[in-house]
Image (cartoon, rainbow over all chains, first blue to last red; front, top):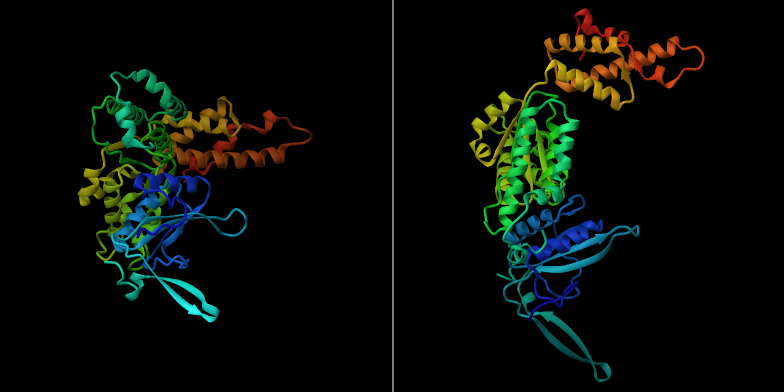
Amino acid sequence: MRVTQGTFSFLPDFTDQQIHEQVQYCIDNDWAVSIEYTDDPHPRNTYWEMWGHPMFDNPDAAAVVYELNECRKVYGSYYIRIIAFDSSPGWESIRLSFIVNRPSEEPGFKLSRTEVKGRNIQYSITPYSSDKPQGSRYK
Amino acid sequence: MENEGQEKESEIVNEVNLKEDFQASGVADILAELDNSLIGLTPVKTRIKETASLLLVDKAREKLGLVNESPTLHMSFSGNPGTGKTTVALKMANLLFRLGYVRKGHLVTVTRDDLVGQYIGHTAPKTKEVLKKAMGGVLFIDEAYYLYRPENERDYGQEAIEILLQVMENNRDDLVVILAGYKDKMDKFFESNPGFRSRIAHHIDFPDYSNNELLEIAEVMVASMNYQFNEESKKAMAEYIKIRKKQPHFANARSIRNAIDRARLRQANRVFNNSEGPIGASFLSQIEDIDIRQSRVFSGGIDK
């Protein structure tokens, strides 16, 4: 099951050239671009690990694509996303976030139903991959 | 630059007009500016013009489908201090931008301190940070030979060199590196780092300025600060240049700039002490020969 989230989630995965152009758009808007990775695809997993520092002072998107490829060398089998922060309102808010790398196999989610008081049903989802401990989920 | 793959196919045409390309790229303006704003440096200007036409022709060939590999643009500028290496690098960045070889055309100037870290594991991130900042533009490494310190085998400079070489090779489309420094030290640096020599296509030598060129430079500088020479002060400046040139630590145009700054200081002092009543703009901007002749250079000393 293909995990989708963030901006452009309905589009096919971007090529590096397309990533470059999207990132350049962010930089031209003075947004700070950073790279994050995780091996826990749960939709409520908001805070991913950050790769390096947020890139505040690179005028060209080639720097981000370069770092992305460095990140892929280490975490090529993880989910990697690019996020762009806009600090112009006076606080840092995410303007744009999109997935740029995903595991070759995505096992999807398990849906479990629990019957609670008054025959109500509580639903919860668990990624199948999170059965394994962190770090050994995607190979 | 966008959608390069797609454009290449649709853009292949049967003929190109080099003159039109030349006009459209705005390169002519930069070359003219180079001619007008820099005095002397004829061999440098010739080399830059040659490089510019080569790059223009390369772009044209690409349009006609005569695909050639993207050319190596890394350069080395060697010459004595104050011969205009940084100024030319700035113009070069602009030129490459106009020709479409770099995307942003900004110049990032660094020295050893900005690239080499102070402890193990500090150098690589530091160098990469600088390289990332320069991507899309030109990285200017001043006094590049200090990166390599053979006398200390644990020096971290070697690490910076390796990263530099790697990025210069793999990200050739993303940034252009210009190394600069004194001629003899640069030659030695290239001898001990053959990897650099082979990755740099253009070696440009900056000659020292002649006395007349230095005087011309002095006049331009004075004019740009809204001051002026008269006949006597011009003669004094010419003599100053002649003597100063023979003294140690002579740094071409930079020494001239410093001399002018000191002359302005003396001029201000003179004007302040001698002025009674209202004075006009011409009096305030006139540099007299006494302002120059008071320099220690004339009495055998050295202006630093």
